[in-house]
Length: 395
Ligand SMILES: *Cc1c(COP(=O)(O)O)cnc(C)c1O
Figure 1 (cartoon, rainbow, N blue to C red):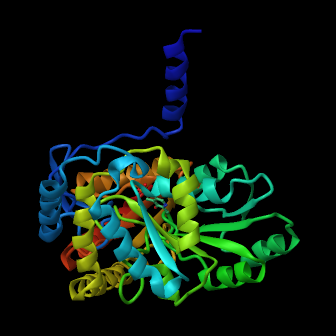
Figure 2 (figure 1 turned 120 degrees about the horizontal axis):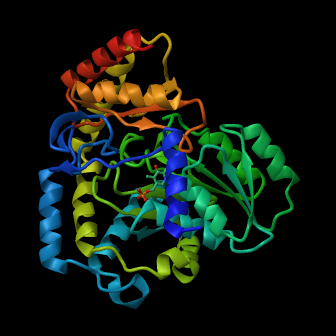
């Protein structure tokens, strides 16, 4: 069998199931209005929830960071790539998370994907450890669990009772419960207070992936732990810096001993070049905005947009997910119907991604609408009207 023909057959199978993905080429900064494949579109796709990706002060800080630190870090953190900027960012993030952790320390990594691989592979290093993984967890957590030597058990979505029974029955040397805080394709929140109570009762870690909560949730934008008012030595927090923070990268915040273990043992941290220090420098500017009055104003505007959208959609056959976050999915059902809806919106100059299996369960293909503080009320009104009309006209 010809090697390329084998690949082409696999690609043909994807295409036959309407599962082929394609990339669109964007020009200009990430913003609600973008040139996409040469067309001017109003976008509801990004995770730039606070509109900081194109913020003039963040862009200026990135420029300044490049002048101070150059373009690249040149090596991994443990060799010579750990710059002053990385270190300041870690100290700032540790201070941010200190109300929620004991002896808080933070570690930055290049991506959230790598941060999740690092946490689970280092913590679940023993074969007699057990990872209790929520059913709707992000792919990076699933891959992290695969990289770990620990056993893995998947508990049903939001089901604290089943999880508690399994924790009680487990004789694992180390128990690690891991969950998204805000589920990325549904927008709902994990029951973190109940999960944490169960973890504390059964001596388990609670690893919280707050990719969609950091910057968005909580009075000061410190994320899901602030939102729920949680504090525990059992918590291991992962926040990403390429979504609401608008730049890129991620961090883990936890007890100083956990962070030291990651530095010593986590291969996805050790064996990779430190990300450019200029990004860390830009992130300090982004955090200053997020944590100040402007951040609070942006979160308030964003919350009003979420209310506006939910109040103006009149859907009968499609289902607006029960979400209070800026992730507002419209569940359509079949892959073809979701793709059709996305392409009709596109014809009208609106960009909303269709999400299909395996990212979501079969039969629940959806339009994943995300809102940003960079949107205007007129933008949301236009989207709501288009969705209402499209549903009525849909076959
Ligand atoms: C985006 C995302 C990640 C990965 O973060 P990156 O910085 O983009 O690699 C991890 N977990 C969740 C829930 C995410 O949505």
